[in-house]
Image 1 (cartoon, rainbow, N blue to C red):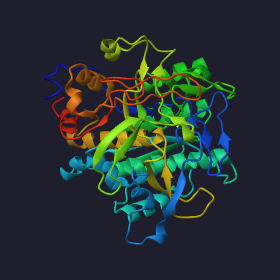
Image 2: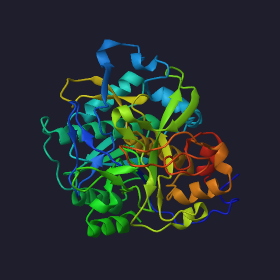
Image 3: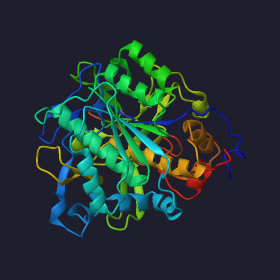
Image 4: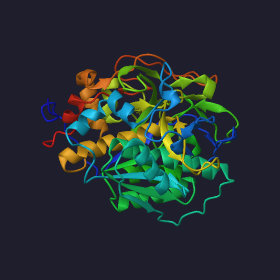
Length: 433
């Protein structure tokens, strides 16, 4: 079935825009120190407690890419091969779809001085080709301070974003666009550069804050420019970071952005065989998948069929669990070089979906453009039932704030669900649409 047969039509922006659906994300460094973002600044979606945990060292298991957290029941972590199998992305690779000729744009803040080394080491460890990685700092590169928890946290975010976008689209070029800080105005400037210069097919942003905490003028400017959900459930830090309140996060809540929520994936840690998923909610780690209603944006046309009171986010989801996180090489942690960490957080979802879009754009030969029209049309016709994993278990209540429950079809914790490739790939990538 093609999208034309379904009657799809709509605008086609130059790039697909993805953002994690943040709810109450607070940044942490390796040490158990929580660093809450001040009002007017973004936090990376790597969670609210120290959940990038050392899983091993690159040199400790030469020729063996199995880590102890992969052999637990349920699996405690996954490498690229397992994630690709669980979501059917290996089916794209079997048809030669690896993102060749496409460009993924990743917007982050500050820098990771070891990202090029870490990416090469990650590739060697997991048998992936080395990509072209361009590092672009349109407003200048802020010197890295290893004693600054904010800098270290963003370096971890960069690591996760780059390595896992690459794991899903190993032949795609990656343009890493770095804002000079995580202040809203600086991130907006970096995003504007990426959009104005049409750097790539898809833009991934793994950060956010409550809509109410962003300067309205910047929020409006961001919306005009854009023409990802959270890590602490249906809550976000208040603007003074003293408590939590029910809120949707920006930029994921923007109706021109595809918001990515969080699930916990249950799959075999060695083969990647898919079992099930639930809403990501791990109270022991003070983290849960985001989702909620916008207080800024009305219900977009593509969500009319869901009869939502305003823009609902997320649109889609992906594994974000801490117990069940993904492995990445990270040398800027302060604990030593070439360490393999387990990362959790909705940050994992946006760059991996960006990799998926790059793979699909390869077969199209051009950018897919806006994804939400397509996804919601397919969902409304029932076609997504065979193309997505519909997550129906769990909720994203967090820290005393009521959340939203998963349900059949569209829901606020997981959107339409997670990818189940096969027909999904051919449907979304149909070159005739």
